[in-house]
Amino acid sequence: MLILGIESSCDDTSVALLDCTKKGCFIIKETTASQIEIHKKYGGVVPEVAGRLHAEKILPLIEEILKDSPKPKVVAVASGPGLITGLIVGTEAARALSYAWNIPLVAVNHLSGHIHSVEVQEKNSLNTTNIKYPALALIASGGHTEIVYIKKPGQYKILGKTKDDAAGECFDKVAKLLDLPYPGGPQISKLAETGNPKAIELPKPMLNQNNFDFSFSGLKTACLYWLQKNPKFYLPDFCASFEQTIVDVLVEKTLRAALKHKPKSIILGGGVSANKKLRETLKNRLSKTLPNATLFVPSIKYCMDNAAMIAVAGYYQAKNKKFTSWKKLNANPNWELGE
Ligand code: KG4
Ligand code: ZN
Image (cartoon, rainbow, N blue to C red):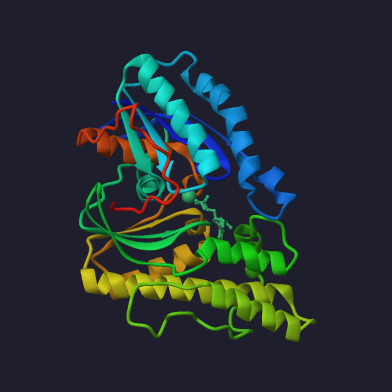
């Protein structure tokens, strides 16, 4: 099944054409226009600017992907959660294509895209990603941090989520305190490579609470106070200690949820899943705690927002005939996974 994916929920305008079969979902063509260089000037994503840039890019990107390609059978669009200014651009484009070509449309939850990002296969790849269900996913991005139980594709239950800031947001805000450019996650993790993760003790939020929820705003405030009190410090040590703190909390809560729910697969997804320390720590701890569970992580390219993952999630919905009429499609900035 040829499926066109569209993603515009934050600061990437992305369009991808995938061929999804029983063997897997293979990229035919993909293209992404990142807005990061523009938002960098403001220290974070400015919704109005994002909306305008998505609107400028979406049609040229769709044209580029469809040039010399066969007509897709289905169009899949991320219709929430995210910034309304961006979501509207993607959903309007998808609506127009569904109407004009008379092809079915699937409205994809952006977070289900991050979950299925581990299944995106490069063109001609011989790998197969055989996720066994039930699965458990840790999705950590700039806007979300959630532990999700997946009985089978499309059946999601949120076991825990952040009460305030997302993990990526915490990386970005602490990077700002350190005068590092947006997005802060990659900057902090690069600096952390040469630092001592035990140099500074920071609070590990919610770790002593018997649930699968997170909270990262207190950690951000603790960093602010620490930096005010200690004007002279070694930046790599601070970055390594901060990164270790976030990773410990994410991994510990995921393992607790895994021990309780005994999934066959563990999936890591979202922008923060590009973090090397998080990938390694989860892999090591999992091999000791739940050796029978298989860990799936996206290739670095598909950790960030992209349309290929939206197409894969859309494929499962299309297989289950979960279509949305172009007349009824709505952008939903607060769409909770599982609703
Ligand atoms: O999934 P994503 O591209 O966009 C959202 O849906 O939010 O995630 C972006 C987030 C940013 O907060 C960024 O700082 C974080 O992912 N991020 C990282 C790393 N790479 C990206 N955080 C920690 N370590 C990284 N290597
Ligand atoms: Zn995302």
